[in-house]
Length: 142
Image 1 (tube, rainbow, N blue to C red):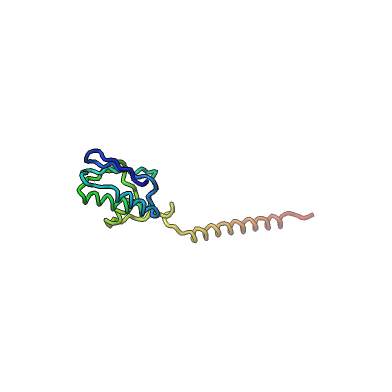
Image 2: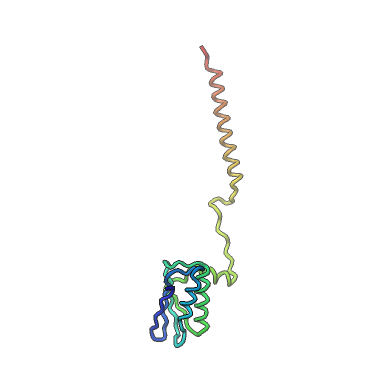
């Protein structure tokens, strides 16, 4: 079961259920094909966050919602539109978002950072070694 549908007058109430992933598309398609928009003016959709939804499932959901709109229904989302569907819409609209920073550093330069760290440690070891040699020379042997 991928979709629970109930009709209340001219309103269709649909709640996503099960798993909406690429591997489930044949069953999702069968569930969607069983829904008739005839006589409806509104489609109320509930997509619980607990329902697994990948991009393939989100694409199919988006197509179904667009088909409902094309059939003249007003689509109302009971909760937030799933982020995957928003991503598809945003991408198709050509909205480009800046990539998030890769780290808290202003510039991510791991080799340079590693080189600085190694240089500091080598200098520390040399300094410690010089101090020991100096101490050994100044200590009288008896």
